[in-house]
Length: 465
Image (cartoon, rainbow, N blue to C red; front, top):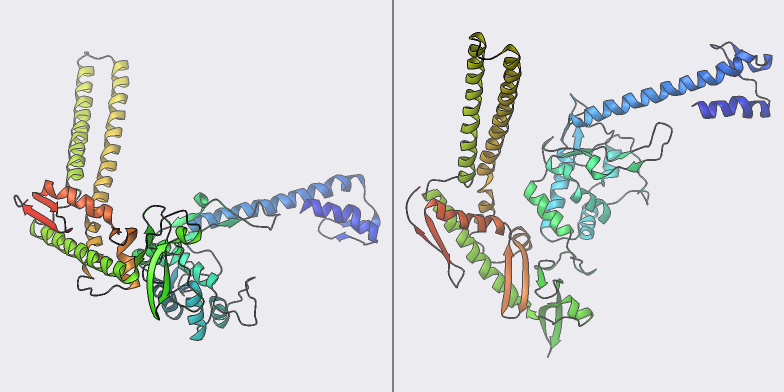
């Protein structure tokens, strides 16, 4: 490092009476410096520093290439995974820690808070990520350790719940340093992170991970005496102000009554109470959910009956037409180039015009061929979407025999419950956009649909497609 080297050689060593000897450079400060040393020594320090800088750039470039190839370059991997024995850049599931991660996600889906999950893991004597790494022989250090033995905390649990490595995505390159001289790191913009999706075997499904992220964004705090949130916490909101409905218990004549009311009304009185008994709200939600599931089952039977017509049929037809036109264009360009050569031989077209027109036809041909490849790629994408289009139906179908609500069912199938008053509520089910899209597509498949006053789906098949 030429700045510090010059400081030591020129100032610090002479001031402290230190003799400096550089054997390879044939330099000894005791003998004094000649005029050549005055120029050569700083110059050599500068060259040495440039060498360090070059090595640093090459290492950074090599690590960047490995990250983009989906190779794990971090010395320590996320809790729940380990590096494979055959390739230290590949991840595999650690059976012991992986099962703990899956349990954490399950507990969150069941309605447990991060604090409750951490306490439960500590009660069971499960080692925290830090202690687990130490027990596995890793020389791992962290600044978050506060006690002799690091325990599970709500922060640790939340980090696991937010980490997309558990759905198979490898995200690297989040932090860096300005250069090889400055060791202080900073967080890079998220757009500059290197994210490789489906890079390794997931521990959690995309569906469960998406639901958990939605739950983490809700205000679902629990009292110190309760481990799980209430059934509709964070889901039920005031229809007027959009604030979450708060559960409250009142005691009248020795009997306790639980009900939901607008949290804004409870705190500031700036909104109506929208009060509704807890049991009435849960019963109404269960009835509407069961009816919606029956409609989903009806839709699935209709799709099976009419021959599983792809939802993207219209888009596929348009893409097929575009593909045919581009293929015709390529054939036409080839024919024109052949005709152009014949015209030049017969003297109809000059050699200069032939070269110019031949290049123009060649460019049109290349553009058409590129368009064909793009259209084929888009068609493959549409077919892949069609294969996955029915997946959301199965999320509802698996609860077709539901008899009572649970927190898991609520967070999986319901996005929001808007409460107007004790007799009027509105429910937005998950995948509501897919549901509406399917209803709109059914007429093109020969099926007329009507939703009656009781929210029942009525259908009439015009013809089998």
